[in-house]
Amino acid sequence: MTTQTSLGGSFTLPGTDLTISRMGYGAMQLAGPGVFGPPRDRDEAIAVLREAIESGVDHIDTSDFYGPHITNGIIKEALHPYGGDVVIVTKVGARRDDKGGWLPATSREELIAAVHDNLRNLGQDRLDVVNMRVMTPKVDIEPLYTVLAELQGQGLIAHLGVSNVSPAQYAAAKKIAPVVCVQNMYNVAFRDDDAFLHQLAAEGVPYMPYFPLGGFNPLQSNTLAEAATSMGATPMQVALAWLLQHTPNICLIPGTSSRAHLRENLAAATLQLTPEAKAKLDGLGAAKEWAPPHR
Image (cartoon, rainbow, N blue to C red; front, top):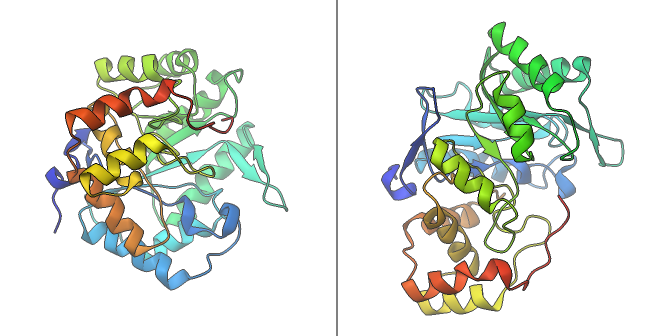
């Protein structure tokens, strides 16, 4: 089995006994096109999850609004009962409309229902980690995080995190209950969170970038392609390796619905960038070779 060392090392969530490999797995792509409806190949989706765990991955990022209700059902079918070292990180705060649109779902009733949906569809009595996802930096996170803290007090949630937040929202959430992880958009080309990322590193808080490979607008960069060619790797492997070598608190959750792509992603954890390649990639964020989507 692949070890945590060969998956980029490990990281312990602050104030917890949860230690995870820095290379995890994001389950978003297990749903159908546009993260909506069932997958094209459910058997392959199940096989991807099982191979990820067999390869040493010990944390999975998901949400019950993927599908909706599809991805968590696949995780349950593939992996339940979960091993004691498997950490499932889910999130609440959004819902899907009939056409697959993404809408906020942040009322008290919606948050409580979402937690219970996650519990039921994952087959858990208590959720390992729940991220409060907000849709914009203007959202007042305090009443939302307070609801989750109440559910944590009831024993339904072990630990809490935040997603798509500003530093101010993170600070506000910390006043209510401990924040064990932050999940924001970040990759080699999109680095709006640079200062925030380094703040969290100093605090010992893991940062789990979503869209580490560009998401719905995949990264395309001459700099990445040149670095990959020079090291005999793929551009996406180089992008993941750069993240792991950028700050020690980054924990990755790249997603895929293909076992071949899963293996490619996991192999990136052992790719050591050359000093020349890293220097060029360090400057890529200011090069504007890629226009990121609005988050």
